[in-house]
Image (cartoon, rainbow, N blue to C red; front, side, top):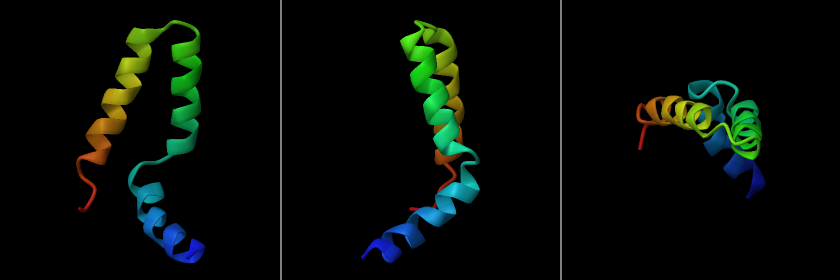
Length: 54
């Protein structure tokens, strides 16, 4: 089951580069109260996620 889950996630890693790092950055920005910057990071991730196959 784990291998199948990883196989499904693999394309995401290619389509949304550095997603884990961006998530960490996002959490850091929110924690620091930099909400405008956090919103911009979310917008970029959202834009990239719209091109993902359904």
